[in-house]
Structure formats: structure tokens, C-alpha cells
Image (tube, rainbow, N blue to C red; front, side, top):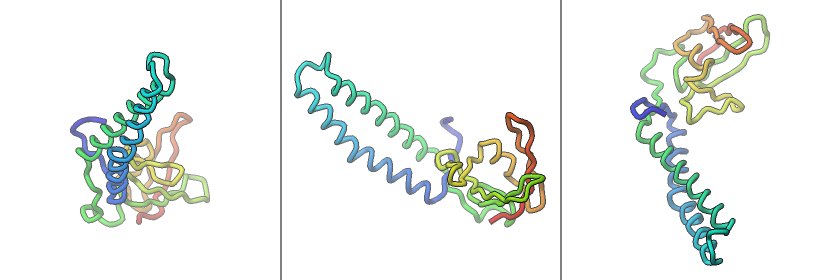
Length: 158
């Protein structure tokens, strides 16, 4: 994550990041501190697996907190008002059909922190997301994949 690049979030995504950060900095930090204190109370920490595990957990926790703070620092809320209707943009949902196929697929274009391909939410920075951006209904998007180029037709933009 670059320091000055905007990180695009939907209003829902922004809410989730703030909620996670709040949980981690309050509840989870207290839980990890309690685990460390309990492990220290057991005596010699040099060979204490519980202490080592708690300290490792603390490191991961603090790393995630820094990551979330960085996301919020560089967050840019996706606004649908700025773009022309019918154009694939971050925050919009697009229905596509692979060339030569009958089945349609639906994707919502989001920033990387919200991407979840299994839920139909793809990053604007992914090959598919980049290929779809700024396209209109009826246009084609060419996605470069390890197995070659895949051509999608834009069926609908919501």
C-alpha cells in the first residue's frame, strides 16, 4: 500500500474498517494484554509457549491496526454522483458475459480492502477490474489471464 495513493472504499467499507479498528484497539488489545499478563504470571518467560504465542499475537494485532489506520488515512469514499450513468466505475455493479458463453456474471467494482471475489466484489486493481473500468454497455473488455486473453461483453451497468 503506497502512502499517498487513494484507497477507494464504499461507505459500507469505510464503516467496516472503522468498526474493525475500534474493536482491535479496544477489546482485542485488552484481551491480548491479559493473555500476556497471565503468561508472565506463570513464571519464567524464556521457555513459556503461552507467552511467546501471546507476544506473536500482539505483533499481528498491532500490524493489522497500523494497516487499518493507513487505509483510513488514505481512504477516498466512492461517490456514484461523479460519473456518467452507464459507465463502469468503482462502486458500480456490472453484468458481463464471456465471449462465446451464455451465462452472465455480475461483479461490483470496489477498492482492494473490500475485494472478495467469492462474493462478486472485485478490486479495481485486479486484471478484471482494470479491464472493465470506464466501459459502457455493449463494449468489450479484454482481460489478460495466465491462460490467455478473455473477452467479456458489458451487458449492464448498475
